Image 1 (tube, rainbow, N blue to C red):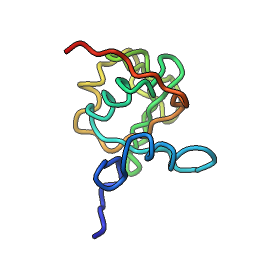
Image 2 (image 1 turned 90 degrees about the horizontal axis):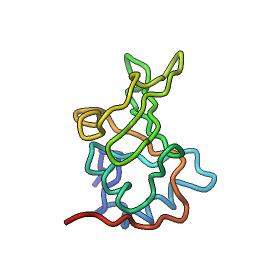
Image 3 (image 1 turned 45 degrees about the vertical axis):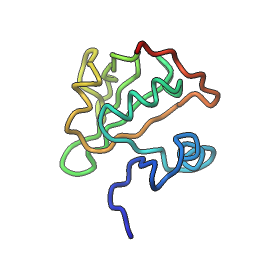
Image 4 (image 1 turned 30 degrees about the horizontal axis):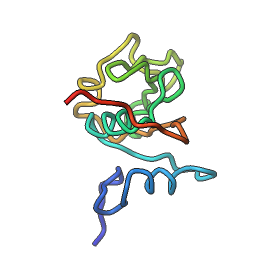
Length: 119
């Protein structure tokens, strides 16, 4: 059965590592994710690196995409571009990634070390 939701789905795509490997290294397709839960998973797994990793919210139709630099677990900074720039300032991904289309993860850590999370 065809799944028309192109973002990461572990039932369809396997582990996060497998999915990222299939969308990296020479591929023109960046991995796609949806909402804050995927951001948190990438952060906790060590794939997102502050000031190196970016996300691109993919609006595709009717408006420009938005690019953000990952500043930390609770910070995304809008990149000031004439076109496809993100909203100026630092934004909480729990809010910014709510009710948006799929987003790409770019410039991920190829050798991630999981971050310790408080439980």
